[in-house]
Image (tube, rainbow over all chains, first blue to last red; front, top):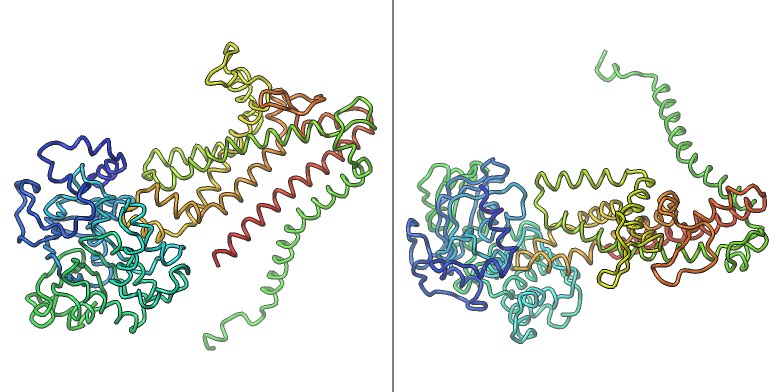
Length: 305
Length: 303
């Protein structure tokens, strides 16, 4: 229950804390040191505690019996999932089912919510992200996040993308990085002549793609998206979906969505949650055409939710 | 009889109550304005006659026609400037810690309560604290620590330190309000790409909060400018025929000089007190105006 608090304090304690890494935890320290090393595919023997059931070889994110509670009241209960590298994984379910809570847990954004606590294990590259020697700041660089409402910084388009790398001590060519990130986010053609204009001058859909570019500029391995299209019109939504398609394979995308059609269009794997519990996980095509559980069928056919 | 008919037909009483309440609220508003008007008119009537460049440029004197406000003006400028230098970093720092870093546990709630209570402590008590802690430093022998002479004695430094304690809670509370007004989406954006708390605060939260903080700081400093009791308590002088040149110099302040003049028997000195009030009011209204301007500018920028 207090793991989050303890971890957060450890993270804030910074270098001094981390230099005290115990030897058998050596592998986990790569979470701080291999900046820019994307994608990390090397096996990390001994990284995961022995009692952890090993997932498939290309699992990038996994949860083991994860319970997330707010002030003691569980919002997510006993969830076990494996997120495959390079896939688009959609988490669907009715409002309040805990899907956003689960998503925020992957990069420890729940640390900022007073009273939030996690038990069980969340494994990133086989490493428990709540271990005391994990730096949540570095974790968030490697697991990027896009939020429900576009939230560009009140800065220029260029600085919106460049700020994160600058803060992270990026040593490469910044102009090149900004251009590459904006190209990857399918925004470059629209903004290449107005990089010095404020990010807020863009349309809502463009702002959201700017936020995606901002996340991509950090060379993340995983991109978490929390209902990224819920504030956008259908045309802007379509462009974001195309963009997500283009990221498949290069990044592992986990997207929370209210929109079942969206999940069926863009995801490889679908996770269905209901009232804080994981009901069913499987290949998207199967979840939408031949679900195993009655609740899943009722939800995907629109009978409730 | 339908449900619609059951509503009271004569709504005259309702409307009369409405009008009465509106008038009461309106007169409550005007009460303060009228009192301020009476105060200003009274002071102007007594004081405007003596207002001259000589008044601003003369030191105090036993002869009313030669007495001036210079030592008090400069004493106040010195004291309030140092108060700003001390209280702004301390107050904003505490506010940033409480809003951006601290886990909202029991300790923080106790701190919040203490700070809120400190804001309500009578200023004479701060004067007592200043006398013990800064002027005498609990009876410390005169010595120099890190190039600073201690104890401070009845100096500008002691006065500023005392006024700092007095306005610190106000600055902390105002700064916290300003930080709370910064949307959380901005913080999430920064943390979500791996920024540390300080990077987020330094580059996003502070720039957004500073106009609001400045408003609070200016209002707190204008309170420090008008404070008399704590300065009398720590022994700021009433007769000072010089302008402070170092923070260790003795000093007086505008409200102290005004109090001194007003407590003399001669009518001429009472008029000088009114003139001093005019100067003090002009400076205070100027500072309040600055605060309003800062707030408006910040709001128009956000829009």
